Amino acid sequence: MDTVSINSRLLDAMRREGYAGYDPFDLLNSRLLRRTPLYRSSWFRLAWLQLGKRLPVNLRPVLRVPKMRNPKGVALVIDGLLEDYARTGEGALLGQARELGSWLVEQRSQHEEWADHACWGYHFDWQARAFYVPAGKPNVVTTCYVARALYRLGNITGDLGVQALALDAARFISKALYTEAGGRCFYAYIPGETAFVHNASLWGSAWCAFAGTKLGDDAMVAQALTVARQSLREQASDGSWVYGARGHHQFIDGFHTGYNLEALCMLRDALGTEEFDDSIRSGFEYYRETFFTEDGIAKYYRGNTYPLDMHSFAQAVLTLLKVGGKERDVELCGKVVARAIELMYLPQTGQFIYQRSRWHANRISYARWTQSWAYYSLAFYNRYHAELSHAAN
Image 1: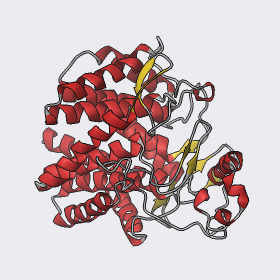
Image 2 (image 1 turned 90 degrees about the horizontal axis):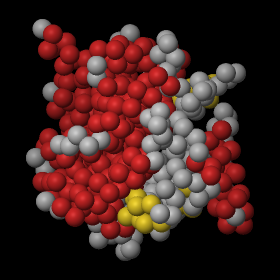
Image 3 (image 1 turned 90 degrees about the vertical axis):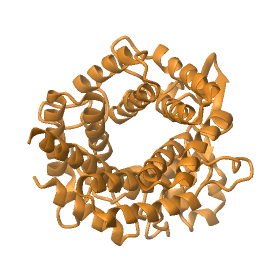
């Protein structure tokens, strides 16, 4: 199982596409759909989006959906390039990361309502049950992933301007997304909405805590702690979190649980606190015992192995090594990577498929959701094991 060669081929495939591609949620970018009055219906937009996500036949070329870069996907590629650079020292990898970083800087939101601080959104209109998000409207998850990648890049290259821009994103989160509603204090997914989602709020808290310590902003750090404690209070006794507070958010899945744990670890490390250790410990134990089969398949939902999704496998690698890191976690991670390659990898293209159900496979290539996550997680895995081997010798 040559994971280095597999990831190198994946990077080459993404590079040939200019790091652009389709997305499970981009069907609203259809140039044909936008010409019809149906586009104005929220229920039609939601149904249309779900069709594009679930259909194993790719209608995007026929519906004239363009291949585009996604800021979060590009941020994940930068993270992967920096992992590969740390492992190999190859300057060309750092050069690619610089180029993509420059693109991200240019893509920050220019809307006058949020342009005072750095923030980023998706490249497509997005209709959820709880809210509608037009293309480019900043959201907390994309902003956090982009800011984290840019800060890492600026730290390695010595670019203080890029680092400052990344830290400034926390100002957007703390000012535009801090919300008090329904008896809760949290960071909203997008400005002006009151849906409470744990992973989004915790990622906002993690970045605000990290940036607050760098900026010397005690008020920002205090706000981040208040927000994080909200999710800790709502963690179940078995260590789990439901996705969010709305009625249709009462599900528990693997990769969002992984997001929560990774964000809490970042928050803990940024502040040097032990306050979150018990929550992380119980959450990780629940995650490890619930979302894996004995032979290493990463489950999507609690109690249901299917659908197999490369997103679940990728986050599993990061959670097992970043949050766990014990010998048994490293061993399980090896099984996860092996099963991901066995079940999801397409040697003929050098890419990974989107999903596999019990009865069929969805082989559509998605740049953000699948390929960028696969690349970053395998690059992290390869660097992690290279350091383990170096330490052993």
